[in-house]
Image (tube, rainbow, N blue to C red):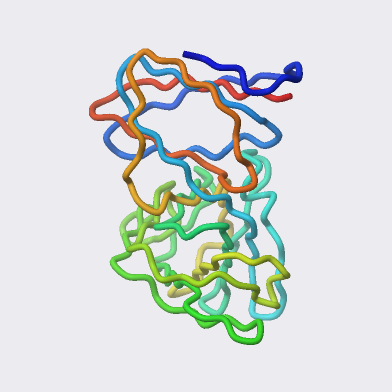
Length: 242
């Protein structure tokens, strides 16, 4: 059943649906909303993913912050990886360890060059400098015929022994850091619309059929959902703003 969480009047609502299947669906929190109401006619499962706190592009000379563009759920803004070279990195800092990232790739501005992603995690930090190590058993769900970042998908890997700390070049936040670079130069125009951290595992909670769930969002700790279903279903999502 639904349960009111805030005592203050609501200022806005926004509705959408998520198609549920046996494959996980990834959904970023909608910015500036404080509660969510969820309903599915059949049993489903839900996981809470950590908040992505920093996204920074390093072009071998300077760092550029694209955190807001990665999280605003707006197609008009994006993280540009135009012509990304093998000497460039995209850094992603999260508040808790993750097993991967779901990348929403623009349907037109996507990579077509033959290349793979080299994804690494921060395994040590000393005097503000990070040491990065390759992730293990990685699987690139964005790859099409040998071209990474060509389609929306999950880049997953075994949960690594990532450390939490401050990397001076990336700011003063205590975060768990991941980064990637391509094996070769990518296409001239690439837009990543969303970057969605994945949960640390797929041991999602079980949500009962025909029950309406409503709860407040912990936006300091979490930033996305993962949903799945034993078969198929439609999840009704209502975001509530106070």
